[in-house]
Length: 444
Image (cartoon, rainbow, N blue to C red):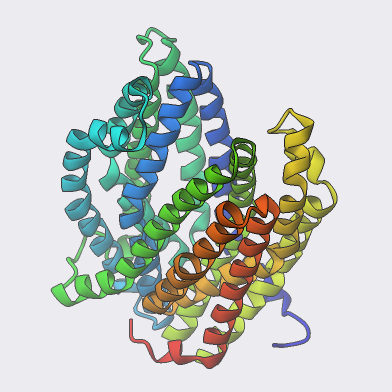
């Protein structure tokens, strides 16, 4: 790596990453607003929507991997100078979203109550969560298309379009939820169903906006002008399916972790819920910078310059490290005030302080690992990324967490130390894979 980072490269990284980070951050903030509105309906409604939201995340995880496949392929076409073909992967992503999303929506609509009942014993929680899940399930195809558009906008350096559309979607979601949950502006009060409908409508609105923007900004790239060939669709599936499986198992791993912590104690489970939500917000910059690294590395490979692709990933790590260190410092030195935003009881705050410090201590390495993981996805190494992520989480971390917590009784600090070490080991493996440069030989 160069000693001094070229300011032009820094500007290019920031211009790609910051809109993505801003859009994702707005989503998390407005998710909290949504949660607060549903919380006004009572703990049963909140529990039902919480479980239904998790089921929805599991469902869409199998389709959002298309985003990385579209991004890797479109960015490679841009780097090769074949701008008129950059929209073909997007067209393929839209077709695959429909092919998967429509039958999945139908199946989940009819199975919603059974799935909820399999996870929750309380029939009132099922009754509150099932209508919300049904409303969200209907628009799975639209979710897949939105992620395909995100991949394309990232590949073509149009992340500001992504950010602006997300902001419109989120504001619409809040307004519709306020109207439909409580019955304002002449609408009937629909409770949790209203929350699901508000989110579903905002997702579809985002899809419509993306189509309009693509008609304006992507027509020269072949948007809706040419169908992908069967071989191109197979290539998208080859890249996207491993990423989707990884996302699905990552989400399922959190379920397993909650199950493990629940065996340690109720207080530990409450604190763990807060810690994981804080962590998921803290890693957003890593994901945003990683998406930038994926685009820049893929474009360099398209130009036939693997050395530049290699440098881009490390340059993004250097730029992102400033943000990672700042976030880590807050968690290390101010854990109590951060936890006090979510927890009221002093014993619970005390219980979460050292685990949160551990998150802060490890976030620089974790953030670097996320950047390198996304860079590998941009280079087309999605199968390698899936194997590393699944083995380290399911084969190493979760068994160790079970032994440390329920079996040996070491508590939350030991489990979070194991998590920090697992995330650090995963980052080091990604770094080693990136250094070996076998990804430079992958054809996309």
